[in-house]
Length: 155
Length: 155
DNA sequence: GGGTCGATGATATAGTGTTTCACCCGACTG
DNA sequence: CAGTCGGGTGAAACACTATATCATCGACCC
Picture 1: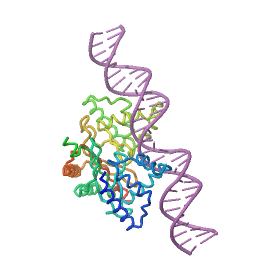
Picture 2 (picture 1 turned 60 degrees about the horizontal axis):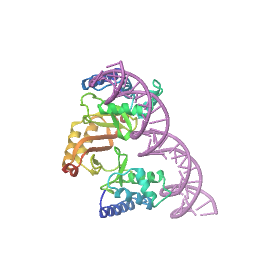
Picture 3 (picture 1 turned 45 degrees about the horizontal axis):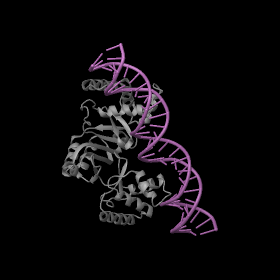
């Protein structure tokens, strides 16, 4: 997902954000976050589990799912529904606990699998308007756009 | 999803659309479509399988998944990613084969589970713009908005 | 010490989707 | 007519994703 330096910075921000909220970024949770951030693309829970097992042989599905629940809850990672996979949030810490996260959208490349998060205000606004027109109170929106990324298109 | 009359009309439109394209809406596929349209909310593949079994005791997961693949391919049903469930398309037949379908969005009620399809041009446009700004060639977008529907909000 | 609460360990199970091989049948071809 | 080729279906097994449940541990509080 990012190079080591960016990853390190994201981890530090996550620690700060958790500290601010009184949330416990335990070693396990931190390690799972590190694995998610270190992946080159959205990563599945069982792939995380495999990697986790190398340092924690006893790890089982609930181990990783509980950590992911915590990270999702605090906006440190997002789930990509179309891929059943998880990705680090590109601006973690800017939301509040129990907030379901700032509006965001994903661009998923069909060719290389790279997935990029954007936060486009016009999209969020159009969605809120459309929902309101239907008398619907929008709480949260999943926006996942599939296509070809700039790098792959250039090839 | 709809009352019997609406369902019947949708089935006839589906038959027409398939005939136009040379696609075979076989009895099995038609029956699965009927089940999806008859459900009150998005329905899961295994729930479909259960209902299918009453008339086709030999049905197995691939039976329903193959039918769903066909229906998805031809834009007769959509998948709601957040629910791992399927819903009839509200304007089936307006797309082309191997087209991945007209732009559409879902409004999912957290309270009653009802899911409504809308086709908001402003949302589709904002998404296309946002993707383009990132140098991304958008092919298809999943937009699923969770919240409270008008009827539940009124209660 | 006893009580409580959140985090983790460990096992089992539920839910969702795919692979694989076989069979049938209609169409096209020599 | 035999051959064969393709799409659709039947059937069994499997892979992947996620949750339920109960036990344990340690920190904190009284």
